[in-house]
Image 1 (cartoon, helix red, strand yellow):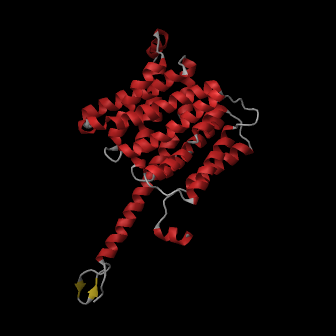
Image 2 (cartoon, rainbow, N blue to C red; image 1 turned 180 degrees about the horizontal axis):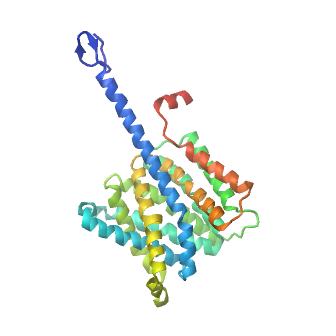
Length: 328
């Protein structure tokens, strides 16, 4: 009789390897869950990448940058809360002592990085602000080693470096770019805030579902962002225009509610560092939209940046044990 954990029950003298089959199914199920998680992260990044379309049109309508941020946050906060009140009230139930988690995800990361980002744009340029924002994957990977005991592998390190270099190339920042201490401070603040969103969300997802984490993040972020937006009578009057309402719903749902929900779903299944790198597909989508919709310049530098980012993101795909052992 065969001994060990791989042996199952005897049937007419044959050994049925039931546990081994079960283990194989379990590994297959885990791989499937990780692949789905990666799909959700990439889908979130793609939706974040289209935000520029809505920002351009809302800006042309007369809204300031911070007002657009407030709209982007307030719309999903209201819509998702109303939906859950009607369809799934249990997702709104949280312990009072856990509210600090949503202060961290909503105020200390989500609202913070948006506020810092737009101040960085004003103090320097869009390109510099974007580059400093995309220091986030490096920060996430360093923090994840300490907070979640994740391994900072050579593959991850190379991927982080490749995505950062790719972002530099895609945004077109050069030696002539205007820099200032204020712009750099706010830019790094946006990168830290962006990174902290991934870390704090991962902590919150240990206690609550992705729906709960997402809706309370929006509510706390909206409470912080709306007072900073400076909505006056002129800005509020713009909402009387049907086009502005549609654009507000679009930026709130397509560029905030759905991508952050998808990101939370994916983040619950894969490492924070991996998720942060994969989310860097966002500038690729934004760059391609700029090229095809707004006839922005496309040169070899931008092409190289896109290739670098896509290659780094592709390298983060989950591998089976056979693939891992073959590479080691």
